[in-house]
Length: 482
Ligand code: NAP
Image (tube, rainbow, N blue to C red; front, side, top):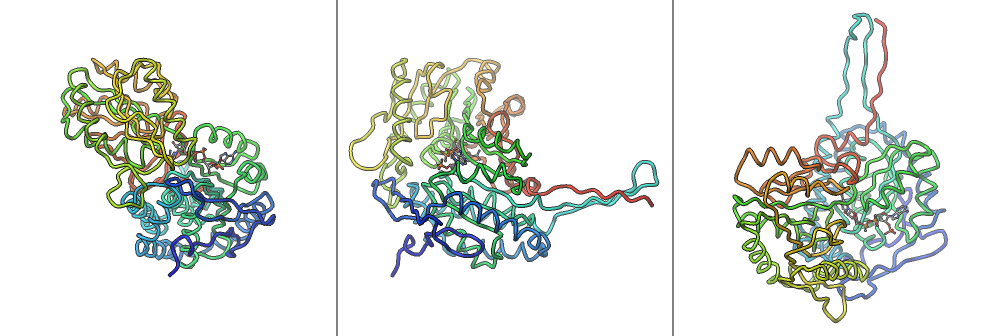
C-alpha cells in the first residue's frame, strides 16, 4: 500500500501534463515536526513559468466559452472528491505543514466548501439591459472573465488558500497559473490532480512550485498577458508585487497580513471570551493572518481573563500533528520559531510577566509552547508585527475611546474581535474599528459564504461570499441606439 505522500504527483502541472522542470531541478519538502525531508518536488524556473503562462493564455478563449453549468459541475465533482479523501488530504497537509490532524481535517472541509460555494455561483453570473436616461439609448451590460490569472498562495492554509482563489476563477471562466508556497507544494499538487480527475480541461490550471519565486513571477506580471494577480501572503511581498503589477496595469487582489486586536470589555461573558481567545489565538498554532495579536482587556477583568487563558493555553498538548491527542503542532520552520522567541524575549525585557510557556524547548522540530504574557509594554515589538505563533500578549485599558484608538493604531486592518454583552457598544465599536471583519463574541470569522479581506495595508479586494467571483469578472457595456 502506498502512502498519501507517495501518491501525490511531484512534478509541475502544465497544460494538463505532469512534467519535470526544464532544468531538471527539484526541491525538498520538509516535515516541520522532525526536520526530516519527506520528498522532493520539481522546482520550476523562469522557462517553466513561461510555459505555464503560455498554457493558461492558450486555454483562455475556449474556457471562457464553456457553459457555466459545465464549470459549475467540475467544481462540484472536485468538492465531492475532496470530501471523500478528507483523511488522506489531512495527513498530507499535516506532514508538510505541521498542524494537528483534527485541524487539518477542518481545513479540508473549509477548503472544499469554497468549491461547493463557487459551483453554485458559476451559474448565477448576471448582466443587465436597460433604457438610458435620455430614453433613446439602450445599455446591454455583460460580465466577462478577467482573463489569465496568476495565483500565489502561502503555506499556512495550503489547501484553503488555493481553493479560495481557484474556485471563483473556474466559476468566472478564467485560466490560471498557481504558484504555491515552497514549504507546502504537496497539498496544491494533490488538488491539481483532483481537478484533473473532476474533468478540468488542460491548461485551465497550471501549477508551478518554485524555490525562486521572483524570477518566475516578475516576468509574468510585467509581460502584459496575465490580466490578474490574486496573492495571499505578507504585506511586504504584497507591496513588491503591486509595484510589479503597475507596469502593465494588472488587476490585483491582495490578502495580506494582520495585527488583530482582541478586545474584552468589563461586561463580557468571560467564559465566551476565553473560548473565543483560544480559537482566535490558537487556530493553526497562531500562524494565521486572523490570529489575535494584541489582547486589550478591561482593567476590571484583566487578571481573571489572563489567569484563565494561561490555564487553558498551558494545558494544551504540544507535539507532532500526526500523534493522537496533540493540540499544538510545530511552527513552520526554525526561522518562524526564532522570530517568535525573539518577540517574547523583547517583551520580557520590557517588563512583561510570563504566565505560561515562554521557553523554546530542546530537541528536534520547530515546537514552541503556548505562551501568555501580561503587563506587556505597548512599545514591545510584538505589538507592531505579526507574531505568527502561539503567544498571547495581554494589555489593559480603561475606556472605550482609548481602546478603539489603540486597536486602530496599526498599519493593518484585517480583523478585530470584540467581547461585550452591550449591543449598542458592540455596534458602536464595530463601526469605529478600521478593519474588514469583526468577530463579535466569537473568535472565528472565516466562512466561504462571507467576504473575507481587510482594509489599510491588509489588502485589496475580498475573497469568498457573493463578491468573491466579482474579483474575477469585468463589466462590459454595449451602447445601443434604439
Ligand atoms: P510570504 O513570505 O509573503 O509568501 C507568500 C507567497 O509569496 C509564497 O508563495 C512566497 O514564496 C511568495 N513570494 C515571496 N516573494 C515573492 C516574490 N518576490 N515574487 C513572487 N512571489 C513571492 O508569506 P508567507 O510567510 O508564506 O505567509 C504568511 C503571510 O501570509 C502572513 O503575513 C499572513 O498574515 C499572510 N496571510 C494572509 C491571509 C489573508 O487572507 N489575508 C491568509 C493567510 C496568510 P517563497 O516562500 O518562495 O518566498
